[in-house]
Image (tube, rainbow, N blue to C red):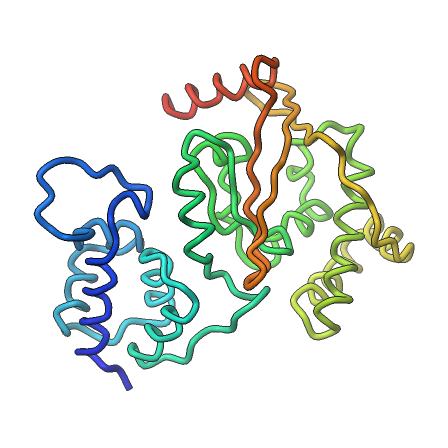
Length: 277
């Protein structure tokens, strides 16, 4: 059962505890509130200000689990806070760990400060959860996919468009890497896991995947540089730095180029093109 008073109070307290800098928003001038405004939280949660305000005022219908998940993410809640919010709203908390799509506040705080850098947060299955604006400019909006297509590894073997961003000479190695990575996750998570389900889907769909799956390879080293072929700025050679959230098995990927290099200049051009777009 929903605890309207408890839900409203908890949301107000969490909103008041956050500052614009905490969530990647400009501070602006003449702020009268001690924390975030309702309209700022609503925008972060991808809902109308009126809808969010009604929850804080103990009005309206019971928020759906999807809405509560959006609020938990928008307010940068920890897992314990997220679970508490779900219970206040009368819902069972979602699962934790690798199957969870709730990004921890630590990774979000870092991502919020990387607006001018290509970066993304992904699951262990290569599902993009968040991207910076430069991340979208570099690889496109990869959060838009649904179902198994959310996984880059799945798209790699089922959608030719997924390979267009990578030079053809790297395709064989990337195919081996995605297959080996998925087999390692299946072994780690077990036969009833989402990773195992993904493999079961791919086996009848891709002869290339089937052949690589039969090698049982789990040790394919990545390239020292990530090479991309962007449709507007051309070839790029980027370093990819990775930060792991061990509680959720989420990865923050940050792409950089050597200062003064041609790829660095192309990233700067891409930043200008992204702002113009």
